[in-house]
Image: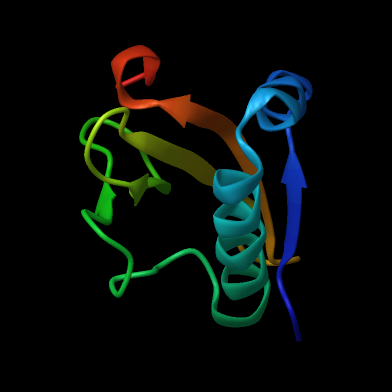
Length: 94
């Protein structure tokens, strides 16, 4: 069964403001999250966020500016997760 990936309202607005190249990378990450689940060790700087249960992040683009995505598992039983941040590393919520 595939995972369901949703974007929070804030993340949807952030996504709309991203450059086209970064949006394509976010789409690729979303597709992998749907098929493989929340753990994505092959993505750059992937990691579980400290102090949080089932919250993860990875870098979408390195260099300047660096873009990141953050997501959390809402329900493992029904395989539901939410992307709650996509944007620059400077403003990331960690």
